[in-house]
Length: 194
Image 1 (spheres, rainbow, N blue to C red):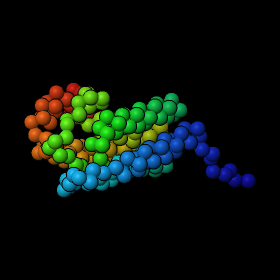
Image 2: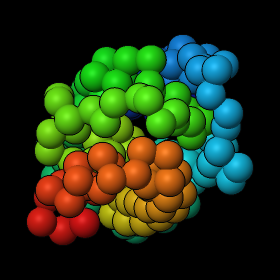
Image 3: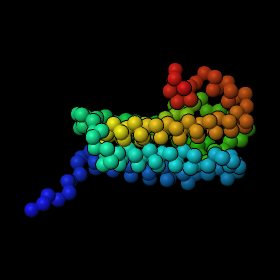
Image 4: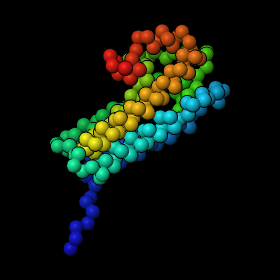
């Protein structure tokens, strides 16, 4: 008698649940638009969404493609990954709540809108992107595969950097000196690094 497929582990189930919660929250928030504000050319949501989707696929599938890159102490690493993913979700949701109506998936800004300097925006300019990176890397860690962690991190960070560059050009153009003053005292993603 041949063995059947392995049953999912607790961490597999929690990774799946985390992914579902994240996707539902993102879908719900993506429906919010500011109809009174024109979209920024080249600032469409796929600029970050595409790389994040690819990074998530890498995070979840690398273990099947490169099993030799599985990390030792898998269960401990998996739990650390889940903690990182949920911390990333919390940071992303805190960013949504802090920006309120000003948070949109499509880049949009008006000269009369305030520069938000409270909540996670006290610490870094783009905490929601840092949250996304943490979710993706956390999911990769939860799968306990070094190739998945490295691949997901590189793709997610590249997507965030690209989106940040487009977004900051827009914010400097629309908000001007107010955004320049705010940006001068804060890193984009990681204090002391970038």
